[in-house]
Image 1: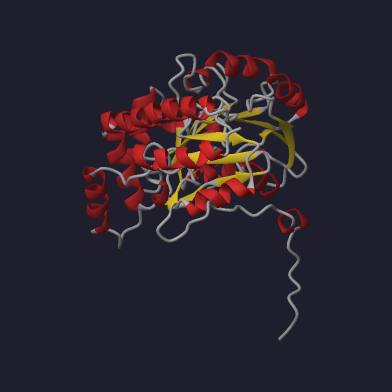
Image 2 (image 1 turned 120 degrees about the vertical axis):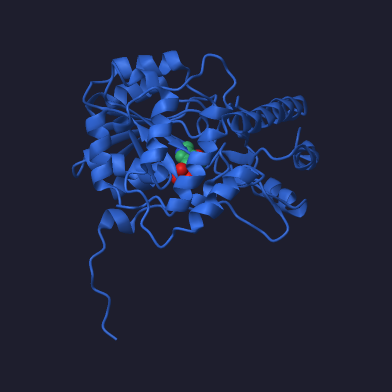
Length: 349
Ligand SMILES: *Cc1c(COP(=O)(O)O)cnc(C)c1O
């Protein structure tokens, strides 16, 4: 056999590999920020119905989904791009604007896809460390973004949980050059209950350099079907569409997304249940003496806990997600959360 001699780009060879949350047979997976239960019956039914036409290609532009999203957020359909998860849209958006060596500023610790998508799109990442509360260092980000091509914001921030308020996002957008693409990752925004938090979508009209990324993977409970969307300036959306894989979003995924958009009340109820559990859990963990940053997402972060805690969780049938700075835990049903609380209390000082 000949030796493999195809030159892989050095930036690709050195990419950090995405590590999905661990799974173990019989254990509860609290490691990937998924919803604990599948979507409702009408959504599953819409997907089954879509199966009957899978011999045909899907709608290229996911037009019905695009139109439903446009109507929901009061934008034009041409301002919406539907993709195979918001991770794919992030990569497409960066690919559309980054020339080799372009600077992309992002908060860190944050979503693991960022340091992968940035070099993959030939750009150079500039991580800005979080503040001591686990939130974005606004001054640091604004300063680093002055000569950047793009700036990523993640609110609520994965894995720590804190948010940027609408006013803070507007302030950031006003303080960076209009040429900087500001990507606002709103994967968890439906779980935010702080009234000062709202989507950055209304900023787009005045600031066409703002792109909002959203997903059906979290509150819509559709992580397995791979569908997300971006909302932004028409020209930018056209460029993202141009670099995206054609027919990427399957007909089954489009049917699921459309049905889920129609079930606004159901989605809101799922979010409310998560919010109630989040408030209960964070209060109980803090009362036990554990250090938990504020979270507006469907997970919380336990600072300073490590491998021994993760092992204790496994022994209790719970899979959690370790990071160098602590452990991220996805909220589940009340009984599972109680089981987790018992383990966590043993680690409180
Ligand atoms: C889960 C998550 C997403 C969603 O990714 P998909 O590709 O849509 O599944 C996006 N951003 C953040 C910060 C996330 O945690």
